[in-house]
Image (cartoon, rainbow, N blue to C red; front, side, top):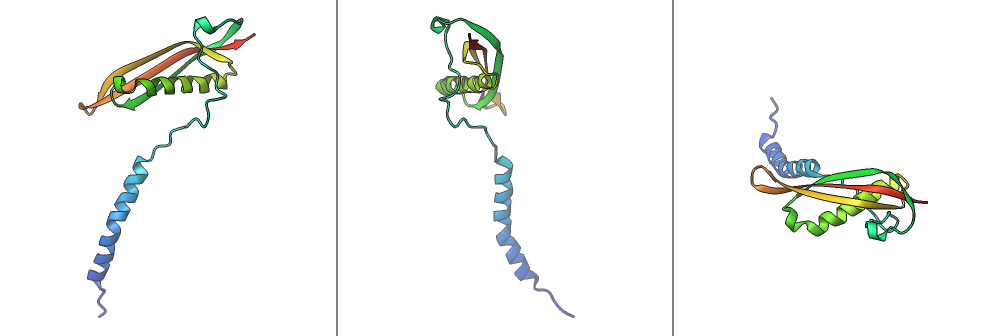
Length: 129
């Protein structure tokens, strides 16, 4: 009767277990986030004081995102992301600029202890006449 070398097989499986678990965990946490390659061609955010030409409203645009962290620590990042995300949506509508921008950030928690921020940005896409 032939005997299989079980201890040798056991050693090989043990060496493969950790890399296999790490590969599976890495695959589980991979998240694809759309990135803006260049915001040079995006419609700018303009205040009402900067609007000197006649324009027409193209539509209202809204974007939202959740962040890990406290809103007071993320102010600059939230504003930059909001302007870029609104610009991307306005460009899809063929707008020349965005006005009446409102950015709201709401503090929340994740698993009762980790600070979490929910950001909503809204604006009006406009086209110059």
